[in-house]
Length: 283
Image (cartoon, rainbow, N blue to C red; front, top):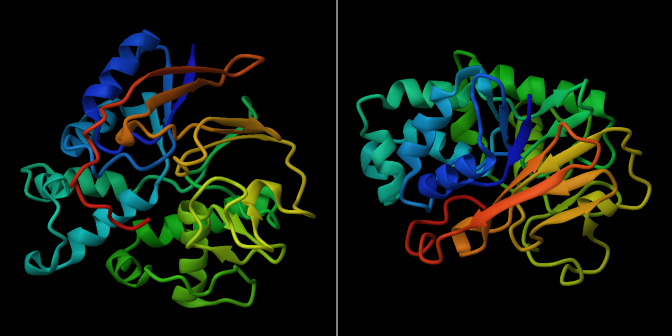
């Protein structure tokens, strides 16, 4: 059995099919992990969701910020929704309820103890152990799967608080957890996230570090695969593999084989025009 993680698809269904074909993926035997941002910008988000959902247990998908943005559009009255044709096709589809219910039941974090790999969209706070990260992810997953999930989605947006604290309660705690798992790129030694800095390391303000290089962070005795940071591109180091290689911006759609001693990258070309005018959503 082969296990592959796949970077941010963002509605590029045709590129996903090209990558799956190159992997010679067999859903009866192989497994795909998606590191979030399944939808938005690519023009084929409806087809992307339908395909990944159809894979059943052969696929694992963690939530990204664009996936949460789609759920936020669902709970708004139609007149208040963002003008985004790609997401509108999902919201207006006959199977919209099934697709969106499936999406909100996806995890924020997936851990395979046998492979010793963890998948999240953006990262894990450097001050958190894996067990703390799993517990905090579960808190939000339970909220999104519960009867009051619409209230959570409606109130999740915002940059405050910028750092998680055990003292946080209610929506502020939930928001801090969501922002860590789905929006983080740079933070300081206290875990305070800089949401404005999105470029390559070296372009961030003084006192901030790529989240995986923060001094004094908890040691990672597990391997991790993430997406989210297309400017960083393909990255490998410190038991971390980043695989958002900017398919939507004309880069590549990248897979990482996980079930081998030395994880290996496999990629197909992206579509140069696919991200133009599709709506940026929440970054």
